[in-house]
Image (tube, rainbow, N blue to C red; front, side):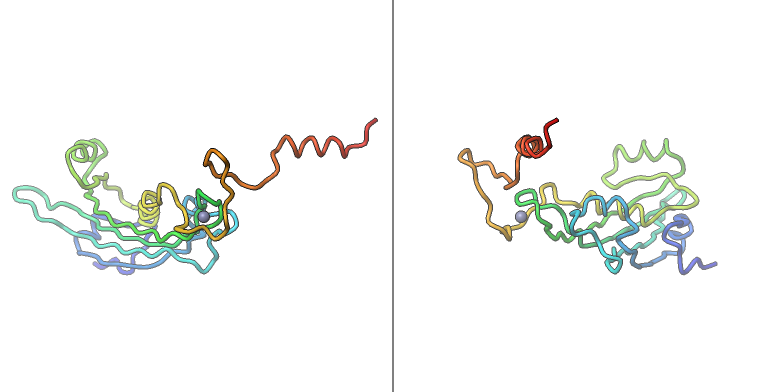
Length: 183
Ligand SMILES: [Zn+2]
């Protein structure tokens, strides 16, 4: 029985691994809320932008025991993040690749995960593969996104800290008060 093509939002991992499944596809970035939250407010993903993914299943024979269930995931996407130096959008190429072993039950997963270099998850009837790739891409975000060379010149304070050229909120408030008609 073949499960091709799979629904990436609801994958039977055990079956996918058993038949050595190999699937790839893409998903609109706008559907990935958590990634979109990380994008610059002025440069949110457009409807055309996609996250690419690939999943391969593997049934790894084990002597004297049931075969291990493995899922190898890859994902990539481009996202405009907030440059931590000039606060303008800076494009980042996100890439993730990780292998997961699936075992029966949360308890066993936690026990094996503790001494495994790979991630161990509990098998469920339906795995949201897209959500898992999104998790990995979130982990792949740069810690401090910034341009190699910022597009706009920056002002530098005497103490060396960078600051934005904008009106201090209290100064703006004072301005507003003066503009209000006095009663
Ligand atoms: Zn910058």
